[in-house]
Length: 494
Length: 134
Image (cartoon, rainbow over all chains, first blue to last red; front, top):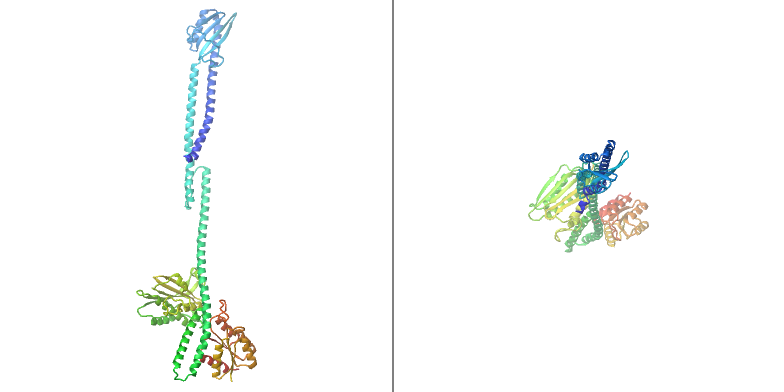
């Protein structure tokens, strides 16, 4: 309710009423005064002229001498409809028309203004002089018809004023409605914008300049807001993306650093290990040389040599992770045959009930690689896939293809660059891994298998080989579904 | 008799290599660091020096460089245990042994060997190097 009272239309109505309340009484009063004055002036002018003419007639016809004639004249004045009172005073004698209704003329009190006395009759006296005779003519005129006319005029004026008031109020209501309708639509639109619907265009049409200007300004504001909003949303999205990229890069960097420090540690351990292994092997060698050919100690020492050589193999694998030096890389125009050979080794290693699906593009390359190491890598990856298989789902897929590394992928893995790569994909339908396990699978001696089932070096060797070939490993895994390991190697130019 | 000097900070390695070379008919001397080995070379001369790469004091690369500078005709074999550890401790930023071995080759080592190697491999290499004395 209070809001309605404050609305534009109610204020406009109130303002019009207020203006009318002040102006209309003044106007009415002025008009009534004018009308009254005009009526009064007309009445008094009229009766004075009439009285004068009547007096002049009395004087000029020399009738003042005859009493009967005077009375006849007085009667004619009343009969003429003009007077209600006619009397004639001459000396002590007083003549009164017998026709007058106003009684015997005792009431005569001279009026100088219309309505001066409330007897409803305008009295006036006119002195007459005819020769020696001096007399006073007294006439009375009914004020009632004039008063009725004035009343009628007043009623007309009041009617006009009331109609005027009504018309202005109705006009104001209609006009304010016309003005507030576009404003209400503007309000509805701007509320939508405020509630987040920026796409709603403000297109309120109005003949009122201020409203159309306001609409244009609000629309300008809205479109600016949309622009700002779009920019902000874009910024948020790009920041979120940058943040996600940064997090990924951080994880990648941490992972890389971890592998590097593990590599350093593993290298250090292997180094010390080799320094122990060398004299062990050489001493045993010397001891074997010193022993008689049929010594019962000989087989035991030969066993020691075997074990020391196994330890040497382990140490080499550890070093492959930390420092993949070894054999040099050679230009290989097509590595598909290399993978074929590796797969025949894999087939020999893995039980026949395991299905191996191959999808090898030909040719794939060229690339700089060490074929033995690539084969080692394939064998290790397949072995790892095999180890992860559980009963029931026994498929290992090996794919090889030329693949273009996109800017997006390169962005995720800093060691990759946009361009031509060779992609080796080994996927299994095994148990899969959680992210914590994925994080550690390349660590030397990390294994999810039972103690004694594996050295935990297979994938760390893979890592070393991939690093040596400037490649990258991308692991995707889902627990219960399986694992896909993609290995990317850069293609060489020729 | 072909004279060989063995430099290694590990006593076991010194002892076993000394015996191997002695049995193979070499005249052997040993030193536990690069400076001693160089002094020995200056005092007694040698056809072949076999030096470890990671040692306290002057390492194998520096020793190989010194020898090559002072004794251009002496053959040098540099050996390393692989990895990238110094005997004084692990340094994550240390250059790798493969880089060491490459550096050793660059400063004039005739052969680089990664431990552990076997006796025959070592003796074969030593004999080949010393037989082509110029």
